[in-house]
Image (cartoon, rainbow, N blue to C red; front, side, top):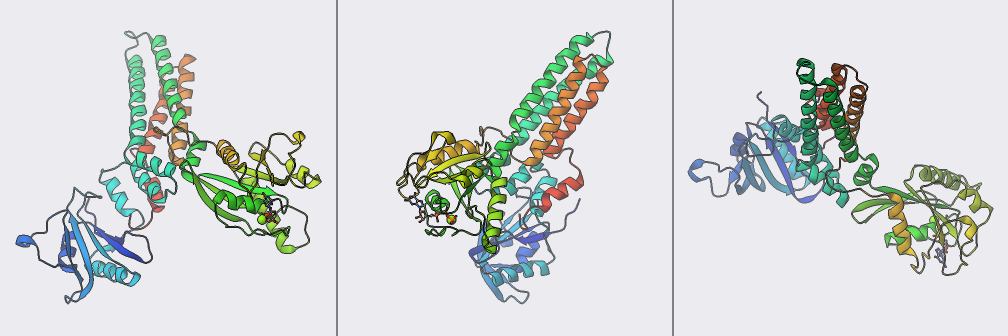
Length: 447
Ligand SMILES: Nc1nc2c(ncn2[C@@H]2O[C@H](COP(=O)(O)OP(=O)(O)OP(=O)(O)O)[C@@H](O)[C@H]2O)c(=O)[nH]1
Ligand SMILES: [Mg+2]
């Protein structure tokens, strides 16, 4: 298959010191020769692969467009396995647009989102999980997400899936042999053995497909501060963030809108949302804020129900406390001025947003409630991988059940083939064109 030559700006849009223009395809070298003039020429007229040249980007008449560095990476030693040209230009919007235009003039076409990575996948340098890892790494906002992305890029997920697939193929081979040579093989014993193998593989798959832990790695944990007006939600938000982000006043009803900020604890991202104090109100704006506060609490992973220790609980607090479920942490704020909380309300944490007392305990409670990202080793973190691994595990369980019930061997083998196909879809071996297009469409241009 002959690919055309594609080009895109690989760096983020906006102003920056340097921006990188990337080209991939067989015109790369010709484009470099026309659009770039090296300050000291090329030795014997040859462009050395993987060598940075200093010089100028020039237009068709040889006029200087920018002062740049250019490198040609001849395939297959390149990101896409094709000839790749990268030009580092000055990062202004106009400068980079001119550079791109020049390269397009010379026969390249603008790349689709993710097209460079798609070529790396289609040319066989990486599998689908590794291509997806490129995207995860680009969007990783926490250490946990970054580590998971790196592990996936290095082939950790592929290795695990391929290992399961190989084990499964061995089970298949067993069953086929028993089917083909019934006289020589003890069928029931063989079926029992195959069922137990299939169950073991299903367990391994389920063990690595923890959807909750994966969501924590990818998206982090959402924490909402809820409660009546004036109990100190905004003050607590500021104390947790370590900055005066939210407005605090002694007036009840200060916070109107939902205010969201993130922080990182032990490599995991927590998004904190301060909300309007919950009360009946005739004020239209405040009423909308209260509605938003209710919605935010409903969808949060963790809710900090804040109470005022100075005033003690009233009917309104008790009404709010009745909404409590396992996501809630009850927090008595203003412990510096307030009495201890009544035992009747159950487990609670006492803090003072003002003095910082109790904040460590609160942070530990948030971490415990939010859940952990699980063991780092080989965890599946993409939703797509988890869904397919679980489907494969279910097919395996069905196959094992059929085998244990003494059903004909070829009944089980249909389920086993399904499982093998699901696993192949994870790495891309059995993925359809539509699926692949869908995955790459979520990429950014230039990657
Ligand atoms: N003594 C003491 N006062 C506090 C503490 N936390 C908050 N306050 C005071 O309580 C008042 C209300 O604080 P906010 O943080 O604005 O309360 P809120 O819950 O966000 O209020 P709304 O936005 O109106 O819902 C302010 O005057 C704060 O200074 C605390 O730990 N100790
Ligand atoms: Mg507030």
